[in-house]
Length: 512
Image (cartoon, rainbow, N blue to C red; front, side, top):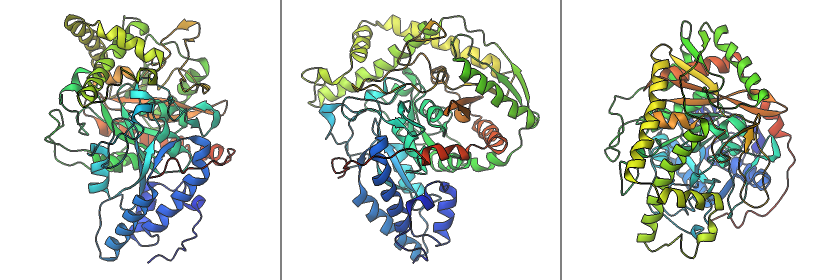
């Protein structure tokens, strides 16, 4: 079928966009089999250095690639991502027959959930993507770094001594290193945006309800906790918009999914932002921010003015301390965790019994704290969350977008014990090392659309800029992101990843 030989070198495809790969496959310049084989070879060569993918199903991927090739020969198209390699995150993200360790819980190494998450279901059935495996994540997603006792840390492709950020750290590292053009992220406190910032890729968290999120037995849990999201991690804004076309749309299983007609989000990437009013907050009022991060983002914001937008620095009026607010996030998210642990116990897996040592001490500390939370305490926390929502709304009534740093610090060093955390203080101010350095979780309190976009490099490491839109105004966030990408392209930064040192180690323990 293809004019390209089966020996096509993986480096030839590694940094092509999903859009370009899909176009070449549709023209039959490339075979899905050639493409999948090339990315498999790249994963085999480079993943041992990164520890980005922790489960591999190469046999299943090759089978689906052959089916995709036969469909093209027959004149059929599976969707805009026909034959494009992708990966799921190893957290609350499921594909029938695949293990789900929920972020590297040792007792769940071989645990299988025979169902689909929305990302996998829609990317396969609507998009035509080919899933090669699952990516690393911290236990239960309860921190902004990527490490766990089962698989260990994911190493940053810009500097292997550094962490990728989390919780979708394996996905962000894989995309930055050219192992995949697109991968799944999930986001309860910044887990798409944090690793995208530290790995120099584009991470998109849509408006709440834009992409359905399925939770059972409590279908309403995604609203009681910080809002939960699934979304794409890519190297370009256009690829994220293509994925959003595939992922968005109502689902009767999600009581909060938006009921709207289909929209082509790629149109937003071609729209001018001239005349838009953009609010810039260097710290969301309360976060200490590393000086080099702050300077990089401040320079990056100038691109919006070059594109014809009006930028104004603002205060949001947030009066509570960042430590009080991060504690609210931790309590609310831990309640969702405790529900999941209780459901597993009901199904015969008592993780807090004989498997208690699978959990880091910081996690168990929050378990104990949250078990003491009363119903009244829960409503008090929701009231604090409402204050943050009101502060955002007050700004976004006057401005089209709000721009901030994504995270307050550069990537941290990986630990050697499976328990990497963020900094305990920044600029001499004490913070929660699990989440308190991420300016992202406020947006999970509120549900606004947000992206992390590469703002530049500092000391050779990526810095992310967060772009937040009005409720349901995904078009504005994508348009501003694309305008920034045109003026400050970041693709050349991946040369650092290309040139990183490799090491070899067997992948046999990861494969099906």
